[in-house]
Length: 122
Image 1 (cartoon, rainbow, N blue to C red):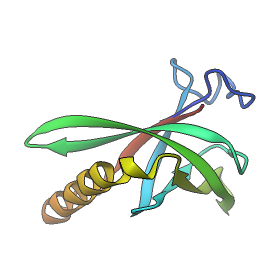
Image 2 (image 1 turned 30 degrees about the vertical axis):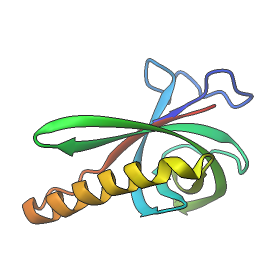
Image 3 (image 1 turned 45 degrees about the vertical axis):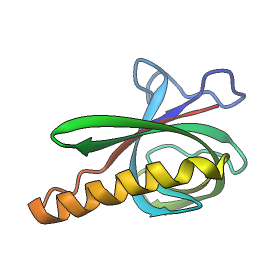
Image 4 (image 1 turned 90 degrees about the vertical axis):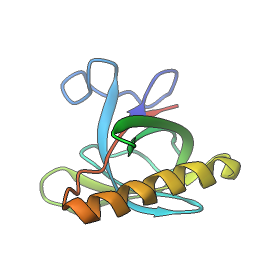
């Protein structure tokens, strides 16, 4: 999820969830940040708050991290943008990256590839 509260970037009610967030898909993960697929263009340099949902022992765990969009590229005719986002506080990366990788490892075994995230401009 990316959140637009308190930001110069505001999402239309027509595309945002009721809380003002946008649903995203995590498509890449590294120690420095995340690759996100977004239905909405988010300008480079925008600070966003990303909430990543992972599963841990059959329960959903939510991780919230502050990120900065470094790259925003349209990847399909349908509204689809690849957002390359770096962590504002790199100290947060360890727990989030480990949780995402553990979820990917688990879903690879079961065949479920539905990685989810929500975000908002900070």
